[in-house]
Amino acid sequence: MINIKKIFYVVVFSCFMGIFTAASAQELCTKCLKDVPKDMRDYVYNMDFMDKDQPLGPTVMKGWKSPRKPPWTIGYASTYAGNTWRKGAMERLMEVVYPKWKALGMVDEIVITQSNLDDTLQIQQMRQMIDGGKVDAIIICCSNLTALNQTIKYGWEKGIPTLSFTGFTTSPYSINTSVNYRLVGYYIGAWMAELIGEKGNVIIMDGIPGYSASDQQSDGMKEGLAQYPNVKVVAQLAHNWTSQVAQKELSQWLSSNPIEIHGIAVQSSGETGTLQALLQSGRDPIPPIALGGELGALCYWRQNPSYINEAIYAWPPGDEVEFGVDVMIRTLQGQGPRIQSILVGPATKSFDDIKKILNEDCDRNSTGWDNPGIDNWAPRSYVEKFFDNPFDPESYDPKSH
Image (cartoon, rainbow, N blue to C red):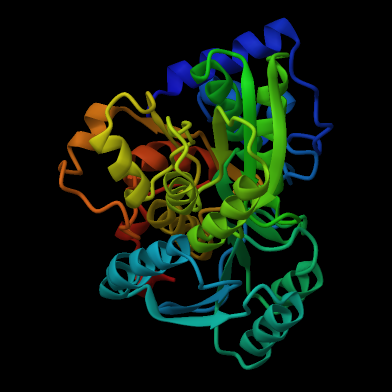
């Protein structure tokens, strides 16, 4: 993980000083992490930086192997398709991840549904996948904490496991992969406060309130900012992880609130729209915002080197979906995941890193994404520490199942 030591020191210092309020998270299965390096346990699974609902117990999939022979059909019950993040995840899934596993003889089809943020519809779609015998496993993304729990249990009873990437469910029958969002939110909040000189007015821009990935990161941001008494949160807006919505919501707020804004802690993928709203508002200078991978916003930084000092990646879409599918394939193969939530740390990039991927004539309106790369985001050597019987999943012989 990029800048792991820097983030680790932030966590250790914060806990030593006692400045973070414990979240009373679910009890951590420490034996599940026995092979995970201590430095990673101490910062990624630090209970003072853990959401209270994060599932941290042993999995029901420990010792389990799919009763169905490969190639497997995987259902992707998506909640939303209307933003650049979802587009980036879908492109990696269908253009890179699926072709790889298909060529290896382990996946024959990806069945995709879209529920447009309707929990009832998503439940119906998942039930149809299960009852129709269409899928051998289901992956979901960024879903409601509890709405799908009964359906996830129903699928498990039929021999169909569910994995939630980029967000979690509280079901004991699902496995979850993501960054520790409360930790990355805290990091962004503290970073923003220090960037603006530890004083000033800050806006927080959330994704979708009620969704675990959004709420965890938002709570972390507020905790991070709260450590600086001269920093004031003057507004909290929601942008549905969509740049067009971010631009609209922020533009409306700025037009009716002429107070000076010193920084904006925005969740990806809303930074490009946030930046466009600021540029259109005529404010000078443009206050710094958190950048997390959207190329349009990163382009502004590329053209204005002193704008901020680093980009902080909370959920690179391509790497996140690849991470999730890798864990699901391992689970189907019988590698035996130990813990319900396999978490990684945030990644950061410097201006020099961005110069390597963008030229000065880049497009500020780009809807593309920069990803740290799966080997930086969730390295195989790290992921395998969470399994009882780890091996290279690409080396698996489908005929031996």
